[in-house]
Image (cartoon, rainbow, N blue to C red; front, top):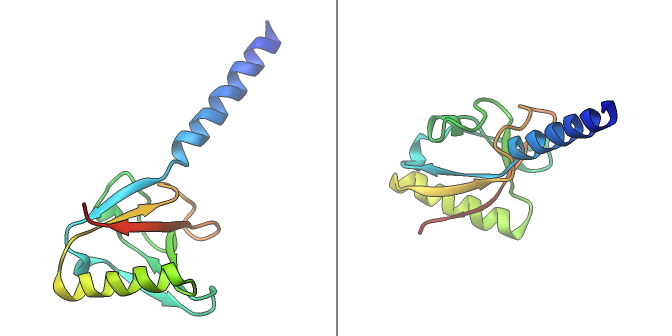
Length: 115
């Protein structure tokens, strides 16, 4: 019986960790309201600081979400984001994890778009 309980407990912990780690879309209704910081000592990353204001189910503040602007995708995505910021337009961002630690293991913005 205790072995069964152990398996159930382990399954529950693993399942809840997977649910919390799931990626999520964040619809930013006005990209000019995004708070960000470009950080050169973190390998060419842009960190987004207030995604929780657009989707309350994601982590807020600091260094939880980033875009790697050293890749072709990152350069293209950052260019699109800047254009959307200048025109105050909306954009969907997909983050690889909805509630990452705020600085040790940030989640990545893996794709963007409008549909």
